[in-house]
Length: 272
Image (cartoon, rainbow, N blue to C red; front, side, top):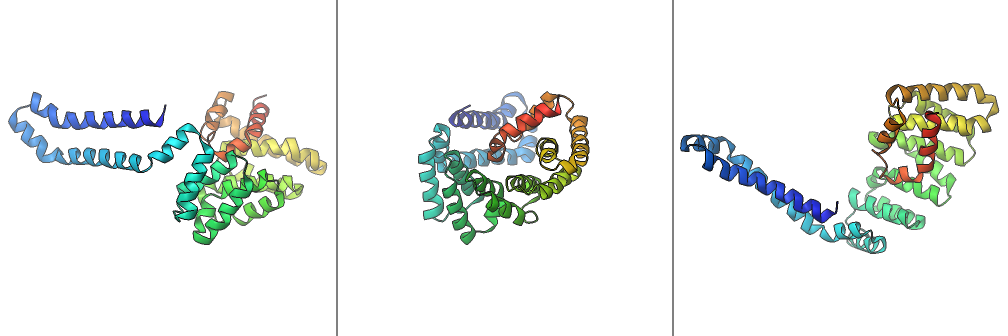
């Protein structure tokens, strides 16, 4: 559904609620009941009117941004965001993430790194908030050692919501740097401690798809850990459809799109 259609629909819903609050008691209830309702429920009318006003104000302020997103005009969107962030200094979590994502869509890893360098000078916390995007830019730019150092330095600093994914990408960057012993330890830790079934699934898949091949001495241990992870996933996501539904939670995230092939292969391994 287009953004403009969503805006119109939301306005209609709010206006209908306001109409019900104003008109329904007058038409169908007696004067004493009306007085009682208005005495205790007048604040509902104020809340809906305020919500309608704030919603439309927010849309009007950001209508150009939404229009560019809807058109998927990435060069124009980048120009707009660079003006907001780099020239006007509006370094917010939402805008920085959107600009970094736009750079990645256009495969401009260098621009992501430049944005990171400028952001860390102005508001360092935003680099941790967007650690997955900035780290992935290094992988896409084939700076695997840089990715390993970046993710490794943020294992304990990023917020809880993205910490497990940062650790997974640290393990992945270890593989890319041929640090298979350390990758074995990291994937093992994720299988045993993660509460995210997707992370457990793809960590288990890497144990049998990569670690077994590169560390033949760890073959039995790798297969055992992979089986443990597989059992954890299948206990909760019993069918492949369940796995696909779980993936739908993250399928719009850049970090998931980057490893979409791995996610698909892990699904095939889990359910065969």
